[in-house]
Image (tube, rainbow, N blue to C red; front, top):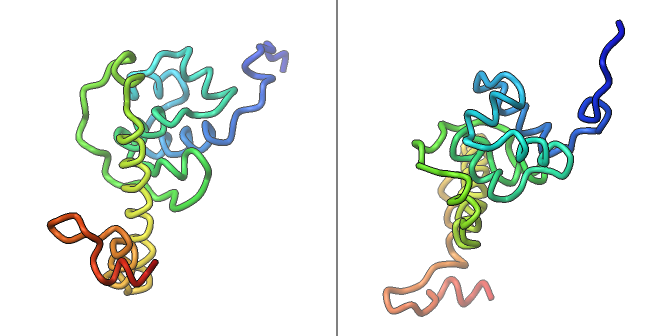
Length: 153
């Protein structure tokens, strides 16, 4: 009953870290130390996420290694359903820090598309959802917007 009180045990956990630990537990990860090992992160980084929240680069790494949606980890939006993780990508603490905004954007768009596909399958409307999602971004081979994309504007 006399539990040792530490700063970590008295500090509330950031919601994004709670979501990441929830997803990691479904993958058999046993707590923050095991999470750090499985994600190639330092224990200090995991501690920072606990207090301040998971970074965008951390959420992208979690998406690749744990199969959870970036937007769900960061904001709690979208599906919490796990997908098969992306095959391991060699990362190091230094290389993750240099992820470009484009890579993060692609990760967020991929997660959004994945969530829309999951919802569409449940509603038997996959084709329509994909077309609505892709239509505003459609261009011809020359780079000009398609007539459907122009009409949307």
